[in-house]
Every structure is written in structure tokens, then in C-alpha cells.
Image 1 (spheres, rainbow, N blue to C red):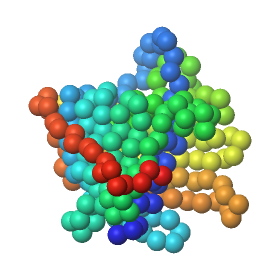
Image 2: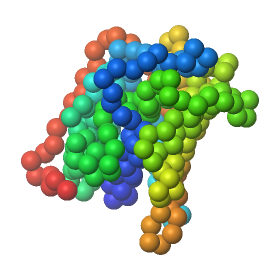
Image 3: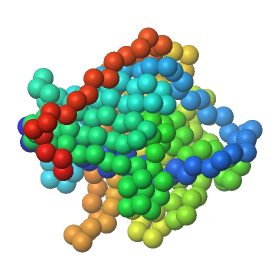
Image 4: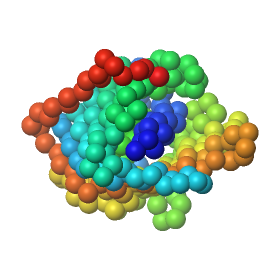
Length: 250
């Protein structure tokens, strides 16, 4: 069961890496008229999913329960073989990850993380990435094109280049690639298995590949997220979350 702690940390490192594409601006010009992307909109979302993490040494799998209140909070619990091994709470202030098996927890502060990674990190980016919505605001400062019969738009911010491929029929993002030019660190997200959710389409399968340099060479971590149930609604959901006093903060 001790493998669940590094699994949880990798998941949230993945979320932080995605956040490098986000920058808050006071006002935005309207998006290009030729680019049409359907976004998931809701009051509350809840779902169940299978998460698999793979690296060059091993494979780990957990089951996840996920709840989201739009623009507010993301709540998750993780289990292995029916036994709860961890939980997480993401809100506008921070990301908190609790390892039940190891009796410890981690708190990631957005301001602190932004300084550490030299880019702005906030809740909106994490929520957008989980929903398959654009992870960076779309304005007129983009390069439009096409690739593999899909609409392509490219965004740049500092040393980051973000390539997005959109299915023109579904009007959904199917692929996102983030590349950091000074290190060549890269993150690739593939969204697939789109099914109706409310009046929109939702990607039930996500594959995330993270490539980054270390002293030992290029590391590739792969995360597969497969939803088996997703529901939208306006009925209020509960987000119970507490940290036992005996747990150590790491």
C-alpha cells in the first residue's frame, strides 16, 4: 500500500506542470472567430475513475472518487483493493494531499509554487485540465493552423510553447503539448473516448506523458485516467475533508 504516496505526489506534480501555461491578465480580447471550442459547463460534477501511473520501473493503479464544485473546489479520494489510501482537496488557496497509509500530508501553496517554478499557478488551470477545457485563456495572440485533420492553435508565454489540436466536428481539444525551450521538458495530454455529458461531450479517457531531464537522463512518466462514471448537476455535493492531528506535515 505504500506505493500510493508517490502516486499521489506524481498526480499533483502533473497538475503543477500543466499550470505553467496559465497567466492571469486583467482583460482579454475576444477569441478568434475561426476557433470554436466546446467547454464543459456545470454547477457540480461527480465521477469515478481508474488511475494508472507507469514509469520505467513499475506500474501502480488506484481507484478514485472525484467531486467538483465549479470555480471553487476539487475533492478526491483514492483507494487500492477497496481500502482508502489517500485523499486530496484542491481549492483556490492551495492543494492538500493526505496519505492515509503513511499518516502524513502535503500542502502545496499556489504563491509558493509559482515562485518555485517561475510561473503562475492557480485553481482555474487545474480545473480546466481535468475537464479538457483550454488550460490557457484564448485571445488573439495565437497562431492558427491545422495538423492531422484537426484545427491547431499555438500559444507562447515566456519560454513555454503550447500546441493544441481540436477536433473540428466535436469542437473538443484532443491533444495538448507543452514544451519548455530552455530545458526541453515536455508534457503531452491526449483526450479521447468522448461521450455525451449533459448537452456537451466529455473525454472519458486521458493519457498524460511527462518528459523531464534529470542527472540520470530523460525521465518519462505516464498517467492514464479512465472515467467509468461522470454526472453533472446543480444539487449541492458535500466535500468532507479533515486531517487527523497525529498526521505529520511533509
